[in-house]
Image 1 (cartoon, protein in one colour):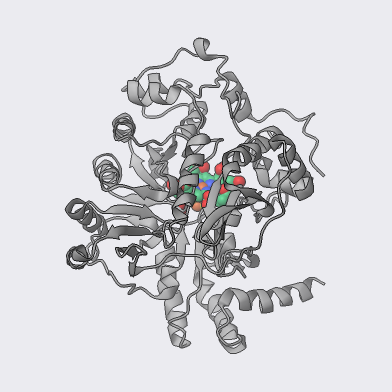
Image 2 (cartoon, rainbow, N blue to C red):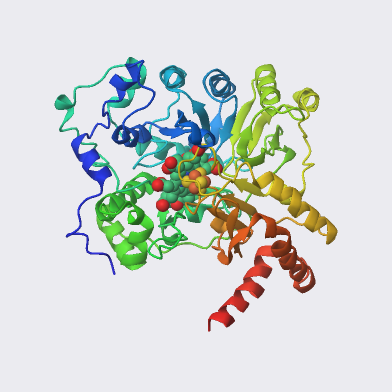
Length: 559
Ligand code: SRM
Ligand code: SF4
């Protein structure tokens, strides 16, 4: 049953958007005020639409709040030319904390930018003809598409379609350019009636996420998106897509009205219908999403409560035509390919593992310097993956040796020397930047993986790949609910343990044990791995074994 929202008041964010449809707030005047180290809380909500989060360093909270900003780029399909990568790298060095944070949606975040650096950083991104507009906020976010270089000519068309949607679903507020490029505070009275042709005055009830996938690879985690397109190829041609809708992962502990949800496969559409279908799905969210409760405002709840049949009927009504039923497809795996690989055009690409997505220099590995040197020397195109890794692509044979030398000189492995289990990890940033974190994630996972590697080694399973993802709270930013083994922060040093996701990213996992303490990880995980080793079928993956054995046990206990 859909909730009857008529009697409930609109959420505060709705009131803000209604009052200021150009999303300008007092941003430009606060930006120009040298005395202000932060924006008001309400302006903080507008900042998000511009790709900016107001944060404070949580390590320093005991001595008072030190405000800083996180800026997220909008990088469709994660593709960056050498020149564009150079801009991000320079800005990270000049204004952020000397690191680039690759995100789980093929983008880059800057962390630790102080207010005096915010204006120059934003201006530089725009001057380089890039943007942060709609990287966050109640709009369509960065559109994802497979980053691996194409193996068939038709796959380029999937990229073209993802780029088309990325542009077609952008909001058209005049304030972004005015504030960050011209440094001007727009007069709200003159723009009070601004009405975005797609989003209307109040935009969407909540964030909206879009991805394209090319089977059998599900490297974009398609079913976690609000809107998804599964490429359907016939006789070497892209003929159309299966449409998916209603995926999303965010939930809150102890609130059963919130939950991760896998998208439904709704219908088949022809290629020329992509934009119309995307806009119809987006406007269904716009018109039916819950604007009274932001925890219940995602499109997934509309799908869950009104049903797939209702959704398809509403979609077809908006399109003015019926759609075909979905066509057959199969996903087999997710994740990235590390090391050197040949492309279809004879050139090569190199997949680099970036632990927890953080490109930085350490004493042992100078990853940031090394990538920059490769990009400067060879003008190499960079691609960001949905699993927080990086590909260097379109490399002619005569550059391979030189690239290997640069990377080796900076301690960066070019073959995948990390263990398979480490290569299949993701962690969200959590502390100290994320205001919502309940526990560590990015700073904790690498050492936990050391311990898990130890557990696997003593059991003779060091070549075992287990997809492991961790987040510092239940919002699900590193998509832990699709992992074979997921850790979700509950409190400092305590994590809910999830098991049972699969290699193809088509199955949500389930909670296995709550509030596992850091000190108990070896005992709990060691116990599970012992049982996995003894009870698995030949070549059975950890996630499949967990779903077969551990879920069945849970179901028996609950019965
Ligand atoms: Fe996320 C909020 C980081 C992908 C679900 N996410 C946040 C914020 C902005 C915290 C906040 O609101 O104050 C985090 C900033 C932390 C920091 O310090 O940088 C944050 N999310 C991230 C990133 C950087 C995680 C990463 O490890 O890469 C990802 C940026 C992607 C991008 O480039 O756009 C990121 N977030 C996701 C994903 C995964 C995805 O989209 O594929 C999800 C789960 C899928 C989904 O949307 O359901 C996700 N983030 C959330 C939620 C829960 C939303 C919900 O429906 O309840 C929040 C909380 C919120 O929006 O209120 C959130
Ligand atoms: Fe922050 Fe939670 Fe997202 Fe991690 S999952 S970045 S802790 S909101």
